[in-house]
Amino acid sequence: MAEPLAEATITCDGEGVTTSDNARLRYQNLRRPIYPPERINAPEDAPRWSSGAGAGAASG
Image (cartoon, rainbow, N blue to C red):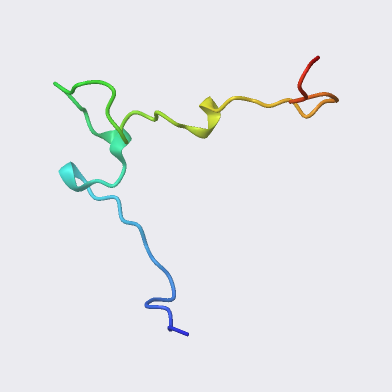
């Protein structure tokens, strides 16, 4: 089994064009939609499924 390369990682958010936080950048002159700056498949945009009786059952 391989040993881990590091015990931990540290994410640094530098200033300028090297930032790892895309929300801090001003994107201009882009064709839309663009991924990942626009959160196309964000978890909060996912459909909410009902877990109630008969949910997902075929009718008829």
